[in-house]
Length: 238
Image (tube, rainbow, N blue to C red; front, side, top):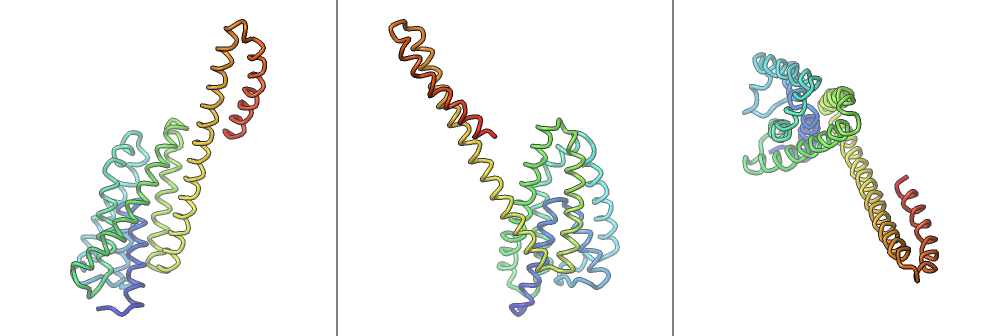
């Protein structure tokens, strides 16, 4: 079994490649195959085939088709439907290929949890971003998102091979930042929705009081809180 530092180093490479699989499935596999073929990456014995010329050619063709497909309307949505399970499988494969001399059960447990989990998380985030782009730009912003994703996958895969510890550190920093931003947006939306409900309830009270002649004086008293609530809604929405 590998010593502690070698195992950590191998896991960093595997997790970094798995994260890159979350952006594009075949880009990190192509980078891993090329690095293994040129002797810059040592794969576990049962994954030596990844560095073969045939595997490089297959991953290269799949990479071109995958990257190109995301620039074609509707095909990008079709790819999104199959990208998540494919990314999890590719991330598990990439991590498993980097772990040497470990009990098979433990090896694949680590590969599925670490590699597959990271790849699936990154892929899920990219699907959310692409959906938001489609909603707010009518799909016009999707090519920009595709370019950023492809570039991110290439950069992260190369970093995972060259500087794996830094790649993992950058990955988790970005993930933490993203989670915080998502939580902030959710809190703002929840506060805006609550303020809107409160303002609507106050308007309903005002309307009910205005229709009742004896209550006209009360209606004038309700108008003030309604205006205050409107201001609250506007501030929260901003």
